[in-house]
Length: 547
Image 1 (cartoon, rainbow, N blue to C red):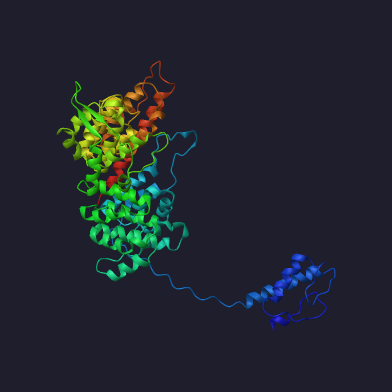
Image 2: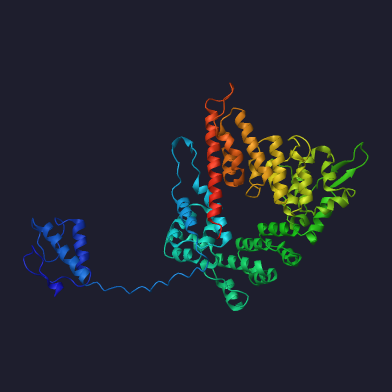
């Protein structure tokens, strides 16, 4: 028997203690040392350490020989089939190239003329998804690795990778983000034909699954999502109520008003504020009417002056009714309470209020009126927030003014961030035209935020304005690094058709006396990289075009 094996180096064969006791004894002796303790069956002799190691070797064999085999794991289910058409071979090779390590990442901060391939990946994914191609199986690990490091491309990667990516994510902890990002952890959400399963998932599912379910139901039936939410609203945690309430932004309509009015009395301030914000986006809601009355009592036109002038009388207190309707009573640091309350009233009031209140004037005429006592910036900033919240292009145009308006004076006095938000309410063509006019007057130094809200690829006038402004900057003799942000945007957003106009700019120009040393060569290098990138983008579009 194995447990009766004689231990070499001991005076006589001894029986090994049963089960794991012998092994534990040997471990204890090894920790304490044979000089202080010897296992049973051994004597404290000079060869005791050797005898201990021999005994441990025998015990190791015994333990391994006596180990019971583990229970066989369940066979892994095969991945679901992806019925989408296969990617063209040229596009598949290009994808492998884009997913490889970025070339030209040398020292010194210079990229040379080599395109930044990883920055082309988002557009490549968008085009592939638009054509409905399936991801090639060998590329799935690299795609998931890329999405793991870049949250901005995760939705596009998961849409392109399809069900096989979720199958892989269940087998690799590094890719579990795909399961969190996919509705229901990658499992199919119940449809309207499965009310019992839907109710079960809503009442017993994980929070992420419930959010995904509510968003899916809201997308196809706003009323059904609202009814689902009301069934458990009273028992939800405050932070969960806030997330669920945010889902009502999709398909927000007048039918949501009764539920949102009830949420104004919620015990969570954040929930109350969100409910008030959503109600203020419904111009016909009771809250919008209350806010219009409050704001209208604060703003009027004074006709006794030589020029009609807007006069403002900000609230003197924040009463309980205002707080219930979402007005935050405590002002931020270094902000006056009255101006803080006024801004909240004005940005929550329907914009249609002001034409009726201010003599039937149009938004352009209202914005052009002088404002007494330095209230102009506060009033215009509140109107800006209201125009963005209510997606009102007429007020956005009035507040933006013409692109040629200088920074000081007129509607153009607002910040670039406010302008970018107002531009987002306009159509793509109008947006591009306004930004092109702005660049023609003000150059590129302040245009980065504005370019970020323009549709891709940039419209012809906008693209030409950017190229012309870059050319002017080159002729000014400065280094191109001051415009690296705009140049990076141009590589991703400029229409590849503009490549023809760039060829003449790739030559090294004669440097004027006032130019920075070597600036002409750096500009030529930057334009060459831009030209190469645009041609590569054109090739990518061709490769992804279905036959």
